[in-house]
Image (cartoon, rainbow, N blue to C red; front, side, top):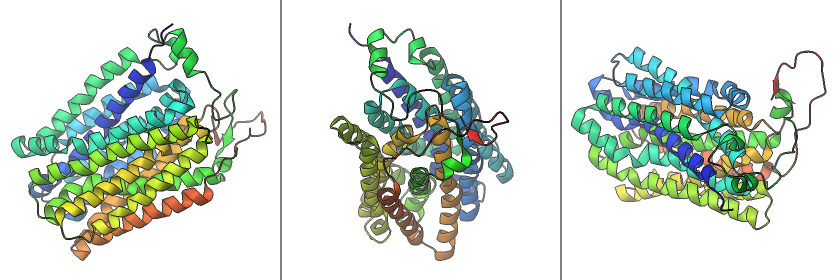
Length: 432
């Protein structure tokens, strides 16, 4: 019997959702120069506006991770994308600084289920040896949404105004929600488009975590894990560079490198093309290593560490005088970060307790997105006080270099999660 490939249709859908997710976030950065002028916003105020999304987005990660594990991805994702699409549209409607902050905070709630849901979908729908490339594909959506669409968004802002850019991008997600409900089921066995051969392939290997019922793990035990802390800091470092560039790259190119907005939009393509390639290559290589016999955690760790070493290229980018050289170095840095990023999500399924991949993904994304609170505001403050973005770029590079070291020292192949003692009383504080 010829094997169907419905699982890859599902991966394409979460790639598209991630692209829409980051498109909706990144419009703010592209529209930034026009918004700052139109609404009379300072760099610090714009930094606060860029950060407001992450206040709620990060705080919601752990609860939505638990919800994904309990309710399932189908309903969670459909509600989430409708929610955040409406908020994106409202960003182009409201005018006051206070209301904009409120809408961006609401949008953070709507987008919060995306990554825990993506990780749970891949854990349920693909065998371990295919998860690296699948995670690389969906994380490539970060680069596509955040950067490859920049020229089109810059054209829309220039031609029709920044409000129109928010209105149009908000509508795209509503179309995706219909496709998701049509194609997706929480379990492959319940999907009529998955034949027995594909189902056998999906379930053909033992999961990286122990088989059987979900292991109840108390919060304290989870946070005593060296592996968990390594991936938490690692995603923080990746997200710091990512959100700095998402919020400030077009503004940086316009104000410090003296480009027009249209020129900055086209130059911004290069870093995100490189980031897309890095995401796919990192996922492919870690899967290839696993297929060749390398233990899964060791394969993911190698890719993650190498990627974060490459991300150090953002430091020389701060000092070169040639505009193209600066953009190419930023491109190398983002490529390295995204090379690591796909493996960073794939490894969650390798080290999480059975049935808790969504919860651990939520924990990782919570800590990672604390960088979203810090990077936009700190970068705006540094640029205002020093009159340049040099120090801000150096800080991002040093944080990334630290992640490479932490991966190599602390991330090991070990089972750190054992069932908590059985209790008849409430299991408050446990992860299921």
